[in-house]
Image (cartoon, rainbow, N blue to C red):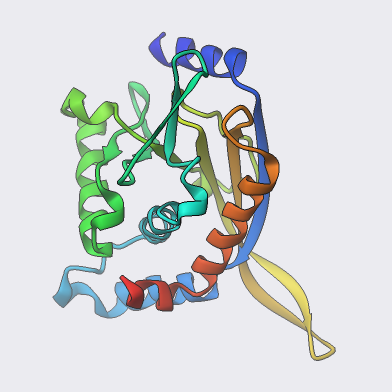
Length: 224
């Protein structure tokens, strides 16, 4: 009932719009394969593609031009509350329904720290042991339905947040390279945002920058 009320309020009170973009997941997929194959001695073999995406999302949201997405719109849409850190909400499917625990200060975590925290919170949600303090306070949310084969969807913004990123399935895509058809791994990202908080062009710039950062994940990781 709580989830239902929140979603109805979100769709009734916000001017929501969704933009989609696909990115070349070659580097992300290769990094995941490396961690799985050789990461156990370093405690990194369980790092998932979703962990990588959340890591890059948190870093991208810290860019000054994207602060309207790392924010809450409060006071009936009259006031923007900007966050200095990225408190990243993570949608988790449980037997009790959808839960969204918060990874506080996600932008200051290493990839391993973020992965460990995400797995701990997801486990606590599924076991019904999550501390209620972790079910609020998010500045932005990521919802991943890729494991179900979904190729595109419209995620619903969790108020008072101003945006949510939907992550879709990894799939093969095709492009021309020097006159030859090339197959590469592709993933679609779906950004829903509150149009009262930002216009379409800034939202599109966020997706563009997120795409660039994901396609250059190794450089993003080295930058820290």
